[in-house]
Length: 435
Image: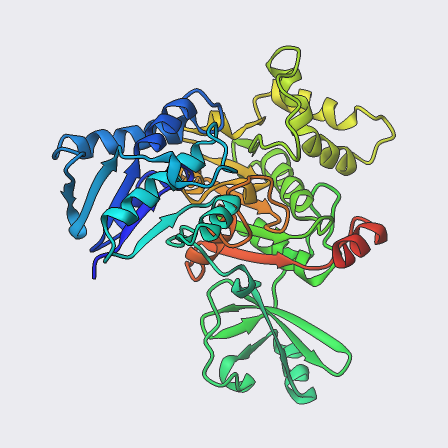
């Protein structure tokens, strides 16, 4: 039987094209959602998505009358619900909360369709709790959801014999047949930890063999990898054939530092790319401080400070403004650009080395928008920690970084590594493990 899905505003903002994913069912949009979308057009963080939603809905409007229902492709019937009886809700529900009006509209839909299965779809956890309390079936938007616990690490660990280790050490490669992996075929651009006793050999998989790699042991901008996962990441970051790299890891694992150091090395020292572009989403942790004083550069400084901190570390200087001075010099030369992600839309960036930091705060749609900006001979690196998400409508399994790493795995120009060991300090490593 056809189901009726009632969409919350945040689902449309998360994916403006979500309506097309409810194949063979009815999709209902309470009129209050349209009101919210109109308000979100004036919000800096959601204006573009809100306008995209309006364009999608306007295209549907031209196909038929929304009040009666418009039949779309994939046998989807879409309509806007204007009925609402707030008295159906308990008195405890406030009348100045749009979510409550959406729930009231849903109760009206349930009353009008007693034999149908009605499901509210929302990315708001509190909304799901309230819906469940009202005995309304509710779920998250799961079309682009990835099980973060199942996300592959980018490397495999296996045991080998002393004889195999000897041959690998001598010849620099070992075939999959020799490892007896039980028919498992590794993903392209994945790495291996080959354990024999207390010793570990590492290699990269390519063309049916695991081979020793060299780039991971390089020194970039004075920085060397401190553990195996960082060596794996360094090998991908320095490999010109790899165009997209995703680095996932907890606080202090070095993901941003490795990306920035490699970017500076590739652009400034080796001149393999014309420009280094570093961008971060502007999403506050906790309560927003509101508008910041000063010009554009002064406003952006607090958001971009982690980038300056990393460059400070790489400069190894006692001057507290070392990172800022390097940035100013490289910016004046047209080599470096540090900016918020808001400005990257609509651009085409050829021969650039792009770093998108804190990518866990982006939606899958925003990730797609960014990666389609990549021009010819450009490399793009995404870094982030899915366990530290500030966006209220995303989690470890629905954020853009996890989605990207999962969907692009196995492509010959894509590489992924999950960094596991903290290198910032022992305090940071203990905090990640225990708090």
